[in-house]
Length: 246
Image (tube, rainbow, N blue to C red):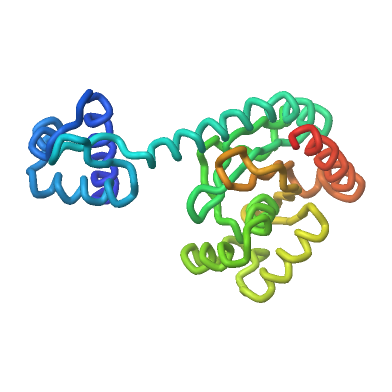
């Protein structure tokens, strides 16, 4: 709860600064968000260090920093990608009969940014905004494989390789080999690495313009419905529609 309150306080500070026209002092900010000045100063210093706040021309007053622009561009990129992908995802879901997901990377995790669910009773369900580990499952592995090795190692070092099911890859050397094969093949198929009984088939697509982050298009469903020719067909369809998003 303490971490959540910290996040709320930081967002409140950004919100009140955003609503000011010429910037706010530490005292002004503290009064508006209900914090003592010493605590407010620490929050402001941290937000300033991340580029989310900066000092205005008026000494001791703060305005939004250029880091906000970076976040806005990333948001717009993801929204634009979702808008472009959604009609294609709908057609893909209708043809293959399974859930189709569009995902990218947020920090050290993958994040679902769009979905079209299967109409079948037994189906994979994701909520846009849901995050997942990158070392488990086709979607995460495709995203991880799209990154430079240095960034891969950073994410693995931070997030670890926790075992989610019996099929999860937890050995760093084995994961490195898998990522190299994925880059060579251009797609990935996994069974039950995040959820038991679920087959995931994923391909990388063009980076979101301006975000610098890769994206992945995936089909997920019960293993028994995505065996044999169904998996081959799913890969073919994904590779075909990916060209429309390049």
